[in-house]
Image 1 (tube, rainbow, N blue to C red):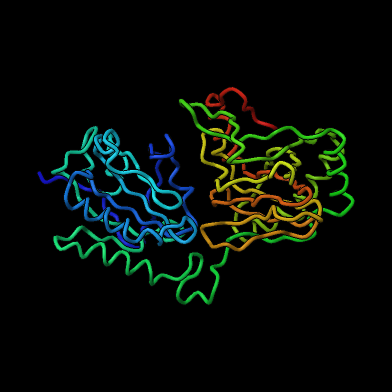
Image 2: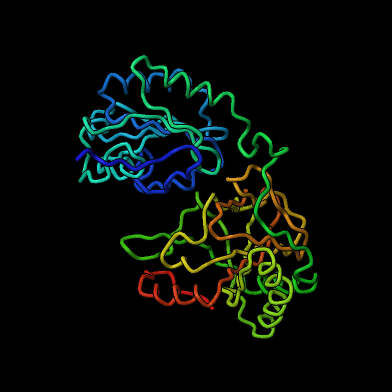
Length: 375
């Protein structure tokens, strides 16, 4: 029987994966969203066709700045790494070491039933161009006359800035709820005062490591200090405001009934720390898979930076007024820009429902050291 390949075509979402790269042993591809992505499944850099393709990338080096566009070459040949036949060039140019063909199978470069590494004779060599939301714009197979590379770079030059699209009338709409007047000013001040009385602790983030969801720290990825509210009176006031002012809006817009809230957390991004949070999603580990909506309620003013944005939909930044909230799906890629002056305080819960609560309970045994659920 002829080999079977995964099918991928313009309009399809590009499959997400984690794979070793030239700069990261476990690169999460979904975090690349927010710019155009050019992928090249070239197989082995020892192949003449691959050499021509990679030569074209070098000739068009200026197109890849990690702001408008980036490039990922996908190698299935361990000799490419051992002999340093290809090397990343930052910003903008990286390579995946796909020696087990995980990525190549997902994208249809090698047959789906290929076990382990890929043989060169099985390779389908092609380029993919993805939009800022990691959806396929074009797939161009290698051509004998190398016209494929010319077509890729001509297309890349013609594309509008990421976050804009023909016929959209400018910036793409961002699927978030903008809700002023969720917390009163005195409630915001009370939460900031509670934080200042107790102080915050350095905050980490969740990663699945060896089958367990663990709390890890990396100041290059996230820098923030957190405080968990334990005062029962204050908690009841917060619950009341969420039930009256956020839950009905989620139900109206998304037809989702939020019945549970995770964590009563006041966060502080400080200028002296360079407080920030790089692009991430809030539900990508076993320990966080139950989260459905994230809420960011601004508690103060007088700071600079610290804006919330959603790279898949463009560079637009969100900063609600004091007491106002931005509510969004935990699946959306989002980031907080560095605070450059003062402190930004925010109340940051997650909302979910009874069905998701069953997922949370079922995943309890996946929680690793340093990570435990908060109420």
